[in-house]
Image (tube, rainbow, N blue to C red; front, side):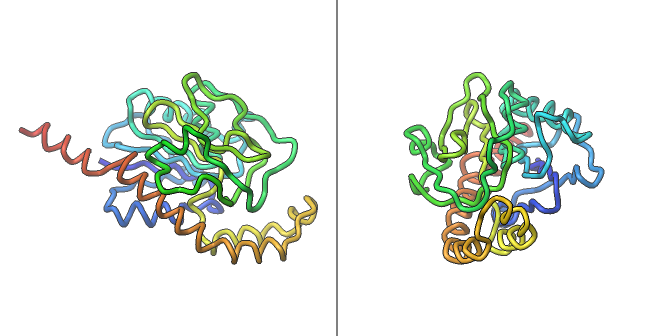
Length: 246
């Protein structure tokens, strides 16, 4: 059994998430949709699905694989296969299950304060996470309507739906807990013009990243340990396989 990772851009690596998955001995199947990969047609040999970030726009359906991915995410959710969406992946998950996304009035870029609400504070996936902390945000679109049964777990001033869940095993996270220090600095250095046009001091953002990077990585590793232990536990799958062979 494997965790399927759907990649949409080489600029949105899995970083801390990939490190954690490998540390926990998960079997992985990475599909680079941005490089011609094909969305699976079924859930054979799949015990978890992770959808990563990317520059595409969900409500415009501006990528050839987008419709197929939404079908796959809904298939996994309906079959109680754990699903985790990050940034674009969170938006795809919301849309796949009947929610809505829209362009933001102003992009949310850089370090933003994200607060867990009462539901998020009690969720096992966020055990040990601070109720309020700075997170790296990098998006121009957002989830504006949750699917039926969806719950908001965290939000920021500019983006009320930073984290959501639908049912027990599907989660969307709008910010980037998976990025490490090197990736964040690479993103900043490659987007100087974007920050300047938004009135953001790039040097100040670099200094803020240096100050926050260690905590970002510590909390990211803690979150992804919970993903491996609580959301997509390999031992649960192995027990099931053993039971089927008795």
